[in-house]
Image 1 (cartoon, rainbow, N blue to C red):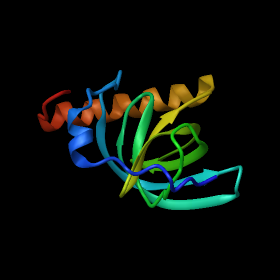
Image 2: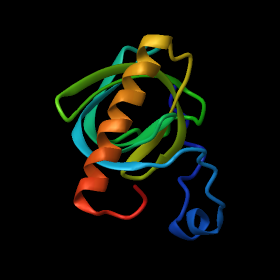
Image 3: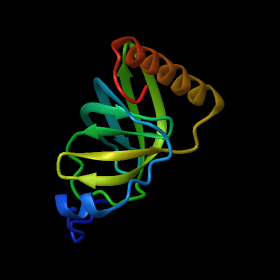
Length: 129
């Protein structure tokens, strides 16, 4: 359920915090949906980056608590994927999503997509690939 008592982070707070990500992120473009099973709410947005353990979705997720269980569906490079997740960070214009309880098939598809993205970055001569 939404809780408006917790203020969203400021840009200065985000800059001071160390990066806790364990895997490289890849810039992506695609459509995304975030479903909150508890309340039956469906939000549409855009997926902006992806890693093996999560993603960032640009959408309005007002007041969702960190740790809220959601299901995300997105399509990147014609690659559809649905995964269970939790809200890891709530920003004014979107949310950091941490994948959770991912089954073997879902993890295999995520790894396959990451390999494709890595190959595209290398082919384009982009840093970090």
